[in-house]
Structure formats: structure tokens, C-alpha cells
Image 1: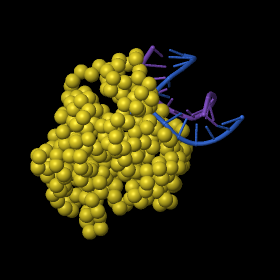
Image 2: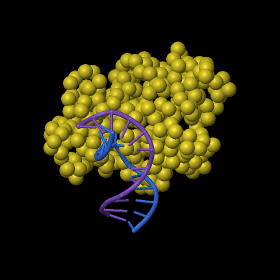
Image 3: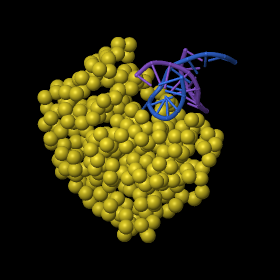
Image 4: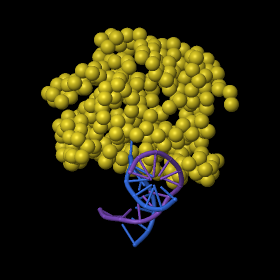
Length: 326
DNA sequence: CATCAGGGCCCTG
DNA sequence: CAGGGCCCTGAT
């Protein structure tokens, strides 16, 4: 099928709070979706499904860490210009945390020597990720009980078969679909595409979103315990997925209460320098992380992303290599 | 070739 | 609240 051609609707400048680092904010080496974005130093292209339409976005770095400035191009269908371009930028500001009080974060982390190297390497990095709640929940489902390679393959199948291909700013990329997409797709169809038992979860969770009961903006305003129980009521979302959602979707920097077995291996190494055969207990790891206070998950995010960036840049991190298995 | 665990979750007893 | 079962894959 021919990709849908998008037109340039607007170009705007935004000014994130200081300090802000473009590359480490817009490229997270451990995020696994493919073909829906492209990153080069100083530029990120991505698609986004918004207001029931496909958009293309281009972020260009026009500033410095000390004087941040981003130029954002919005590409889409002309009919979408009035209603969507403005609120879309507002949404991007939320998802990438342009307004985060980084100065306060760094002040909080000052007294922890083990964080300093990561802070320095990633000075100005924001937490942030591109997906909607709906998309993220589906990502969570394809992550379950599968190695990375298979998760990537399943998610790509979803975008190719149920999303849309768009062309903008010289790139051809895949774009996400809307809630309700699977209303008329038999579970058997997903099973033939090798989603296995996840076919059922995808169908059920898609139907839950289609009711409109999981409004993302409303969810963001709820107290954290209500956010948690609401998210857990989604079919296919359990304890491992929910805390990813609390951090990435609800921006709950203070929540860190779950460590899965493979993460335990990495954290044992990161926080205590243990090799993979000498695991530090989950309780001990959580106690350590608790000390980072109201930004505790951010502290882990910095250590984690630093590790991946160093790996990405070619530094040999053998024990990580063993664990990724792409 | 067979067996098994995997970046979980749901459901049952 | 513990544990079996689930689709499929790659590792052994």
C-alpha cells in the first residue's frame, strides 16, 4: 500500500527548562519500537496517532544544554491543522518533560556519589517517551514472556498490519492505530500472526480502551493509588507493567517498588558491582533505591540510561551484552 | 531430536 | 496466596 503523504502544517519553537540535553532526551537506546521513529544526532522524526489521525513530527535541536531551544515541525492532513496542532505540542511537552525542574532533581542527587558519573554523562537528559497510554499498554503486553527480538517482531507486525504508513519530511514511517482497532478482528487472526495467548489480552485491553473509560488525561490527575488500581484493572496489566506505566505515563518519579529477575541482575551490578552469579536480594536493592527519595525512579533511570548509552557508544559492557539478547 | 525458560499475567484451588 | 498454564522461540 502507498504511504499516506503528510503536509507540513506548522513549525514552532519551544524552550525547555535549563539544563536540557536534546540527544539523550530524544533517544533512549533501550526503547525498542522500530519503524515509527528515526533518530540522528540533533534530530528526531516520529509518527504519532492523535485525535484519530496520523501525524509526523520532526524535532530539531536549535539550542544548547544551557540555552535549550527545539524546533518542532508538525506534519499531517490539512484538515487536522486547526484542531490538533496546538494541543499536540502541549502533549509533547508533557511526554518529554520539557518543563521538568531539573535543577531541583540535581540538587536532590548531589549527596549521592554513585549517581554523579551518570548525572555528568547525561547532564540535561529528561525522562520521557513517545507513546500514549494505549500504545504503552500494548507494548507491555508484547513484552511479556518473550525475549526482545520477539517483542520487536510482534510490535512491528501490529504497526504494519493494523497501523498506517505515512510519508513526511523525507521519511517513510509506520504510525500507530486507535483504540477499538481490534473490535472486528477475530482473536484467531492474531493467533495466526503468532501473538500466542497475548492475542486475547490485546483484544480485551483494546475493547476496554474503546469504551473511553481509560482517559489518559484524567488518569494523570488522579492520586497515585487510584492510578495504580485503575491501571491494574486493565486486562494484561500486572505488577511488572504497572510500575513502568506509573513512571513513563503518569510521571510518578517517586514510585519504585518492583524488580523483575533480569532487572535484579542488572541492578546488582549497577548498585553493588556484583557479577551476575552474585545477586543482591530484591529487598536490599529496594532499600538502597529508597534513599533517593522523591526522585528515586529518576535516579535509577539515569543509571540505567547511562549504561545503555555507554553500551551504544561501543564501550564493552560484557555482562550487559549477555543479558540483552536481541 | 526433545526439553525448557523466558523482560508476566490470569485463573483456579 | 501458590502454582499451573499459556503461544512461540531460541538456547541447550
